[in-house]
Length: 226
Image 1 (cartoon, one colour):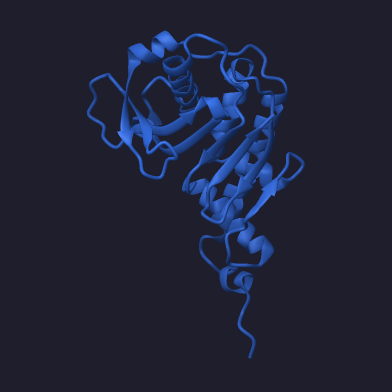
Image 2 (cartoon, helix red, strand yellow):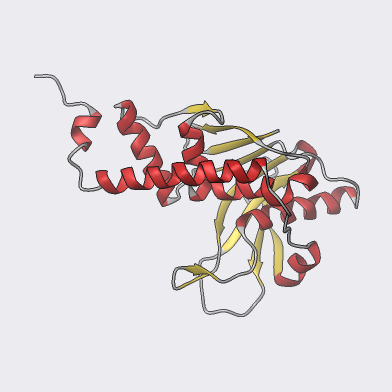
């Protein structure tokens, strides 16, 4: 007898209905973010002075980075919460942000530190640029690569795509704004910071849209800006 397909194996999973709901939620959120990107209204960026006052940033070893290092930014305020911090490698001269691990300080399921992931990305990028080049204009942001995107709703989007394609492999590919897959990834937790980099900081980064989203075999999400 033939082996059952991936869809046949998973269709009776107790998670199926939940995953379908998560996918639909991410899809709607992605379309909402696309609308905000197209019409950001009044931007509300956080100032670099507030970033320096609220957060400390240290350079740490990171062997996966092309620079062998990363910036680790943590909130300065005394707190009783653990497991937070923003570890990324900005390379402004190449227009690149490599994202390793990002976690806001949470209490009762809600973030309590004042900057979002998008805010931190921007100010780390600006910090490196100023250290190297001074106060000149920022290089245009070209690419944000989130390494091994593991957000729970991102995993559920991937689960749905596997079911939809009836194949157990990671649904590798590059997706444009007309694609539901693009919108679902943009609406996931791992897509939020990319969207709000454009919405809040697009004028400073020289970008007005996310031209494509790529999912790699390593499960990286790569956002290309235009």
